[in-house]
Image (cartoon, rainbow, N blue to C red; front, side, top):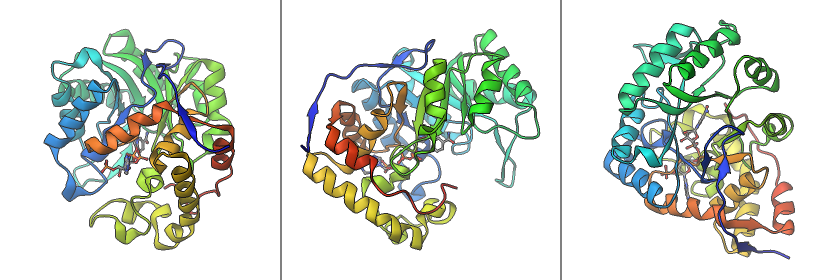
Amino acid sequence: MTGTHQAVIAPRALGDAGPAVHPIGLGCMGMSWVYAPQERDEEAAIRTIRRALDLGLDLFDTADLYGPFSNERLLGRALKGRRDRAVVATKAGLAVDDAGSIHRDGSPAHLRASCEASLRRLGLDHVDLLHLHRVDPAVPLEETWGAMAELVAEGKVRGIGLSEVSVAEIDLAHAIHPVATVQNELSLWSREPLADVLPHCRSRGIGFVACCPLGRGFLTGAFREPGDLPAGDGRRDHFPRFSVEAMRQNRALLDELGAMARDAGHTPAQLALAWVLAQDDAVVAIPGARTLPHLTENAEAASVVLTADVRARLDALPPAVGGRY
Ligand SMILES: NC(=O)c1ccc[n+]([C@@H]2O[C@H](COP(=O)([O-])OP(=O)(O)OC[C@H]3O[C@@H](n4cnc5c(N)ncnc54)[C@H](OP(=O)(O)O)[C@@H]3O)[C@@H](O)[C@H]2O)c1
């Protein structure tokens, strides 16, 4: 049997101790950074964020790095007067120098200064989640995490999380202070967390925030070759999966996904998101969407229930060609 049916949307807990949120959140990065620079429109992005709240979406993901810095200001503007309805997640631990180069900085001083600057830009007295954007190999994780735990004790942050981490790193941090959430990439073409990190999070009561759940847009079918991406779009240069050859080979995955979506009466984006959510109810997905049509389409994915047949066909899609970074 193919096809899907509608179901009531239940909120999902962001870990044992975290708030319950809509299974679909909103990734805000693309509103200010990396993608389609000439299409960025701050007022449209603010309308999208406010519409997300109206649709019941409540988890908003940003980082000091996005922009850099402008994405947090944008989110702060959009949430003015509505902060109580939102769960705000930001990140620290990637620093950008005057020349625009990005480097890891897990020093306690950097984490503290970054968090305080994020709060000022967001216009908030606390964030709900602060993720360590990347572990800094030059600083013992215990030191970085200890500094983040202090921010919790001071009330500046409700929960702390890790991004792009291994099971060993999760355990090291969790022994010092509870890891609220792990934010790793999970999508039909990035399945690595299914092997170990996601089951580990489940067993420890840690929430899992799936970033890039649409494969940075590839899984929507919006572009099939690099030339379909807008000029200046970071995907053209920075991600191996978006090279001419990788995209040519990855089209097989896209064609199968598109055929399945047509059969099921949904869009490829909706099937891709439903597959992510179906992995475990510890998972929430944060697709990036700048426009109201994309936002609405993605929100509807929360009510798509995959039949066993569709799920099996999605599970069997070919692996991606090309590295993530
Ligand atoms: N922790 C980390 O290291 C890390 C890394 C990357 C991202 N993230 C977070 O994860 C969030 C999501 O990742 P992402 O934005 O990179 O990738 P994504 O969610 O996989 O894909 C976003 C792309 O898909 C497009 N899109 C969204 N919905 C669509 C739809 N229904 N139909 C057609 N196209 C659609 C978006 O276009 P429009 O923008 O034009 O709507 C955008 O180009 C980010 O915003 C960020 O918060 C975290």
